[in-house]
Image 1: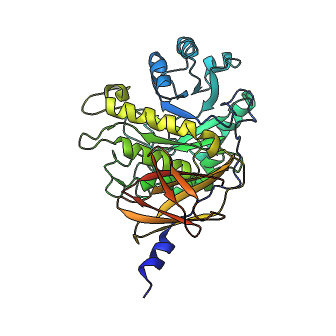
Image 2 (image 1 turned 135 degrees about the vertical axis):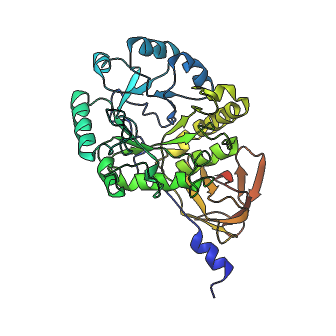
Image 3 (image 1 turned 90 degrees about the vertical axis):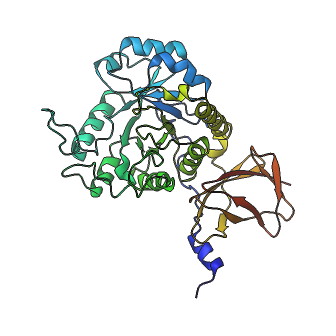
Length: 387
């Protein structure tokens, strides 16, 4: 019989994102900032009039404009200092030198069933070949900006029935080649799918899949829920948003987009601003990620790290980075349960001080290891300064 410790070791995920471009936006002269201290944090399809309020809580770009872009929308965003990724419409092309636009986007979720023109239900998804044709045309019209493609929850949820007729999982690698930035969305707290609801780990599952489907030179982002959306019985909490953000980053996402619409029990486009608790939580998460952006994008060789959970059914995903005179370890529990976790870090000196960022506590290493306790979907971020 395998021991409990062996089960724990086998179930642990040790993830280090190696070989990825550390300044992935530098090749576009009018794309997102290529500064390594910049981490893209966006909001989905919001009115430009709220741009300054979003900027104040750490949002640094818009994605999508309702029935846009229009000249008025672009002017409002420019006044607020808020860049945007939008469709390459006629207005977009007439603004090809407008620095407010930092990227172009496909229609949202072409992998989902599409509404029929006659209004009689839904038909097939957009064919991957059509998506690639659009990509090639837009890149030819403007090679100075990246093209973003956002896919639906079928990326992670194999039981998703919303692909419609003809849609199949094998299509995803074909979609993947039609984007410079490949993204997707799944909302596990708001989801009514029994296999997904409450299982935040689906977020990371989709990010890992995108990394295998994206072109080698492409960047992976993802969309995170920040409202109740249409679920009147469940609403995501601040800690759940933080867990989704960090499991995304740890698994290779290099941009986060928040979905803040509420549709039930009433429609609120910018619901985040009517929820002080969530708004404050998102602001704190954004500040935390931004403060560590240069570490996340560091090109210094990361040390080998493993994380062994005491619970046989709770893996921990972990990312190590070197930056300056310190080593950083970012870790997230991938199930809603409690466990003690032992981290083994290559080159960790006995007695080394391990600062737990944002928690005002420290740990002490022994024998090349340090230990910590994790709650359900808990996140801990560690800094170990060279001695």
